[in-house]
Image (cartoon, rainbow, N blue to C red; front, side):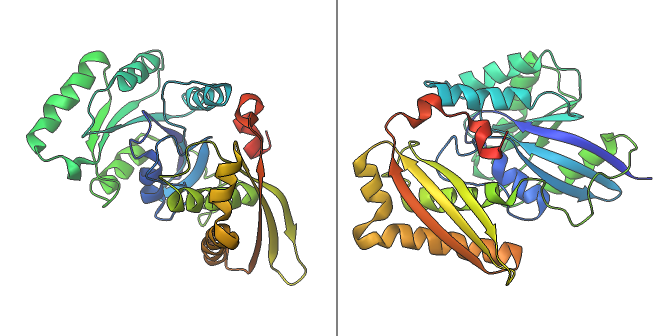
Length: 293
């Protein structure tokens, strides 16, 4: 008998939710970066475990919003607590129970579906005996149905987590073909690939003032695709950083993203990146537009 359901990954920023999503899927889908607040909207992947199939929703991490664009990201995270079968609260075990984690606990108190506490990055915790007291601190504020200790980076504990999720899913026919990785549009995945390489290359110089979106996605007769990406920054100095001397930086970013997309999709990709300056783009932009919503 087939089982199907939806689960949501929520928690503070930089807890490793996107890394956990990628590990659960067995393939890279969500952008991961040394920067916090990397995920800007809900990302859905499709995972399999035995006779169970489940859609996994990765969300923007909770943080203190300072601008309208941030408010939109928080709204996306809050919406992810609705219409799912299981909620996974993912926490950085090294950081512990921070103020933002405490705020997430309050938000989860009203939900009725099963709630798992996932303490991530346990491989980085020097004192492993601190894990049980940490779990008890969270449980004192909210009754979790299950608690899991994982390291998404190395995969420790992820298989047990998948098995626990599969056991709780209702009997229902699968919603996707077994080889489906995501239901996200390819234009969104393309923009995410460019954004990841942009941040990886300029993680110290470029703050979260860059918007990356796909302007056009053109299917060509030879089976290749031409993707036109628009990068919007706030200041002329940031534009100069993204372009690099003689355009070398943006060219390297484009090459890395193009290779990644070509390998993932098994087709030739033509990638074109344009950079513009809009000082107030984040005051008016709705993150859902990145998904065409």
